[in-house]
Amino acid sequence: MRGRLLVPQAAVEKIRQIIDEQGLRPGDQLPPQRELAERLSISRASLREALSALETLGLIRIEVGRGVYLTDGKPPDPVAAWRFADLYSPREVYEARLALEPQAAQLAAITLPDAALETLAGTLVRMRSAFQAHDFAQAGVEDSMFHRLIVEGCGNRMVLDLFRTVDAVVAEIQTLPFAQEDRVWETLEEHERILVALQSRDGGRAAQAMFDHISGAAGRLGILLGGGSGSASAGRQMPVEVPSG
Image (cartoon, rainbow, N blue to C red; front, side, top):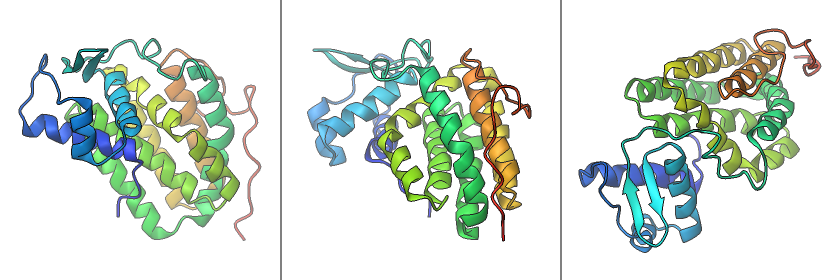
């Protein structure tokens, strides 16, 4: 079981399948949006979210009034391509994630069942394969699923509800650092450290690993949050350790 995908994320995978099946190349035009929405059995709003995610990754170009075209796959400037700029800056999103996700990881180290840990491990296997294939859209899907599974498994319904309200924002920001292809392996290594801590049922270590990962991801975009790489005391306070018994 790979966990639940949001409709736009599932649509990203299906659109990419259509591209592969039809043998489309850079410069080719995708089917009209109405046709795509019907083929995928999704709303136009969900389709627009999926297309925006693919545009952020540099896989398509949306030309208003003309259509959607494949590009050469080179990501644009990530911060300039940030489509939620009218709501939050990337810094604000990373700061909010830093306040929320380490705590979720700490709780999840205690509450996640073994089956969920196996599912988490599977996302990292697929993420590695996606990076090797330079398939950053699929890597983004796996990245989002990894984080969502941790929040869903943390056992705190309010944390989960807060996360769900901004899920699309978080899912997109997770792909922005992929623009630096020479550093994508840092993302995988950080996820692996989170997984090892969760498998060890070490809440404090899981929180620190998540803290370091989010700080590192922000840093790859030039956003310095402080306190990464084990120095949580440098201007940030980590969550209080939750007793395991």
